[in-house]
Length: 303
Image 1 (spheres, rainbow, N blue to C red):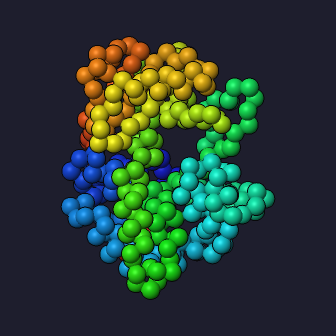
Image 2 (cartoon, one colour):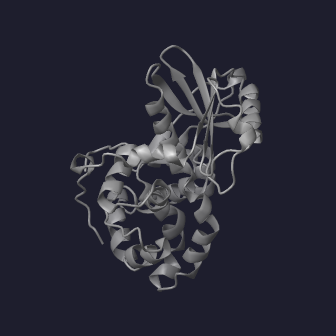
């Protein structure tokens, strides 16, 4: 596998290899198994694959991961802290119960090893606020492992999977949100052809978070929100996004909304040059024209 493939490259490789039937299915399975080059039967329930591929192979996978982390307990605690929280450095260190100094050393090491990357708010917050950077996993599977497997290793080693299953059932519906947001950024970049996007990311400060913030070559500011739920997005989603921008002291030229379940008729009527709406059908372009050239060769174990 190439040293640092993008999330979109990983996603297309996963789809070429495992042939999910649609984007929604692809996103769900990729959020759990993505980035490892594994064969995944997307026709089987995801819980069944988690048990057969991960839980029953816990000792082997754990052993391979400790080779990367050198069995460093601080690194493992930090990875779980990032996986279980919002990714902000302070929050992750607090969850991991490690000092800032030890945490910064672990962060540097994990970034060098390619397990984590550092994200910064796209714009400086108003009033010279200082905000934490965020830590992101470079491989979806590693995030899943440190969310649901590593914290419950005692039961897993004894063959008791109940706690893992209960915790996954609680969080399964929202677990794909982060990957959906990242792929929405990629979709947005692909959609602005005549005035290409030159900067894109997220914005956060102490008071507000904006899922997507971008700038185009002509200087336009784009602000976006992602809603990955079974309910249609309504006009309130646009109102909330505008309120967040006002708090952050932005005046976007274009608002964009991404919704798994579509939009209310009232919101569709607002669509125009300053409001773009994206539904799941727009993400199907990620599954188009897949070929051998999209496949990332991974030399890791298949399990």
